[in-house]
Amino acid sequence: MAALAAFDAANARDPNLEFADGAHQPRELLYAQRLTEWVLRLRPDASEALRLAARCQHICRWEIPRNRYPADRAGYLRWRRDLQRFHASRSGEILGAVGYDPGTIARVQALNLKQDLATDPECQTLEDALCLVFLQYQLGDLANRTEEPKIINAIRKSWAKMSPAGRDAALRLDFTPGERRLLEAALRPEPPSSP
Image 1: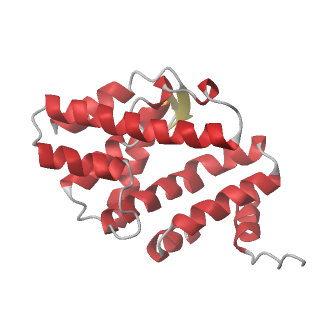
Image 2 (image 1 turned 90 degrees about the horizontal axis):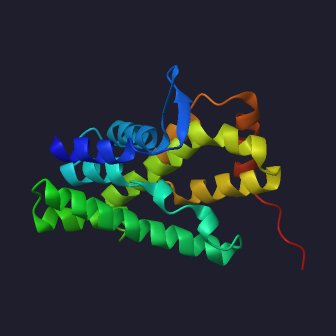
Image 3 (image 1 turned 120 degrees about the vertical axis):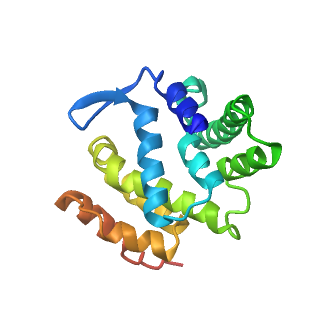
């Protein structure tokens, strides 16, 4: 499929490398492949738009680095919002260049922007896949460089975004003992706050 090849070619330019499967690979290319795999595991009958959205969800993400924004929560939220718009815009450019119709482009962009997350099953599948990539591939590294309360909070936030099917898939992941302990801590009911 020309669009997937174009997305992969764009992400292959990522200067940030990650070691996986015995070789250093462009981080966003690897991320897009992992996200696509999770979408197809959760929904083998995924529509073309959902498969396309998975492959371009973080397209060229390195072009808008986090350090361009203030280090506070507001800066983080603005960075995330700007990234979503950037990814949707870039995906639209690439899809248009390879001949996709405006309706398909708009649908992929809506998924990129997570529009109608509460009511759109495909958007929820994409959100589940995003959380599963985090839990399977990024949790360990993040735990090594993040204070435990922050990582537990990150797991809780991811869990809250996931559907029952996504959570079930997460519980079947092959976590290390340390990762499993963090997950169990995150899923433990929080004690009631004192008055």
